[in-house]
Image (tube, rainbow, N blue to C red):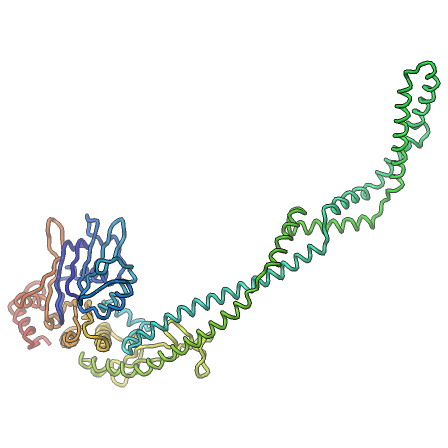
Length: 569
């Protein structure tokens, strides 16, 4: 149970402390007084996310603290967190700082928000207005059945296994994709490596081919030029060699007169030999060079091999050879993951079998609990003046064409909650067809169904769980409100119950009554709360009956309600 709640600088709360009691605690007050702010503070202690906008204007830190008594349910969680809780109570503290975010403490030890939420869920069951919205979505109905069936531990184990299964499935899918990519890459690299190797490329050959191509392409020009130069230097009439030979003969005749020209004669003879050699070489080249279109085609085809492979694998031969060596190393060192793929596939298959067994166990428990839940709900609804309604809990297979679990020839989906779909069905009048609760129930009917669900489910839990109902009275009044008040009163025999209400019939059933007010202090509005005496309760319930103008009649009616005469019912 919640023993004490302290709120400091939260929204319009400056400094508020309330000591709560066992049994049925009523919180009332005018609209806008700040009842929702108190619930918001409690939600923070239970693990709701914090926002800096929650800090009271002009302050830097907001603090919410709570003392919780009867903590046997959370001691295993505290032990995992390394928190010693020798007594039967714990202190929870939540701080919101403008520039530093939010911090959570249990018994003075800082914990994560997730850890705080795990503890909070065990301590308090807060039923707010949004819970009616949960009823309007049939996807949430399975959680009510699981709570009634006591499936929490089994479902948690299943969901742990389901998460691991999904991780393994994801790994298997990624590995399959990787193996496929690897094999495709290996095949590509093998083809590329073979293509490059079989081409037998070399820098020497490429250079030789380019040179030969130039010769063949320009054969006629080369041949004509070489022959012409040979004629000028050596073969033609009046060639350079003839001229030099005549010059040498004439100089020899003069040598007897001038010995100093001997060196010049030798020099000219050397030039003559060089010119003759050059002329013969050019003539020989002129004879050798031939224009051969077939050879030119062969050269061009071979050079095309070089060009295409360089374009495909690199801009130059060195880059092509570098790429060849790289893929060659990859092929030499390639490690096939197919064995790992087989192992992981076997693991996923085994996990699927294990998960299917757990899902089947959950399903069996749900089918068994569905009739009992429906019967229990109908009994509570009868006490809430809905004795003629019919209520059912439908458990059906989650059929999926791509499901992973086969049952009775059907393919079922293994989802995060198992293989079942659960829907709460409702018929407000005898003889009418049962339809989805979400489709046909009115606001007042939803309120009573929600209370019935919580009453039945809470009866399956340990005594001492704190239940908070935030305006469960939506859409109801009169005798129905009185019936709800009595139901809440009965529920509070084994649980601490906090109820925020605007209805006098419910408020009069409380063991303790707290009034939430908004008052002006220092030019600013702040929220306050105080426990009411019997006389103060009469006045507050009188206000709830007649409005702002509390009359003697409304006070008398309030007194009759508090004394159990229930005149307004």
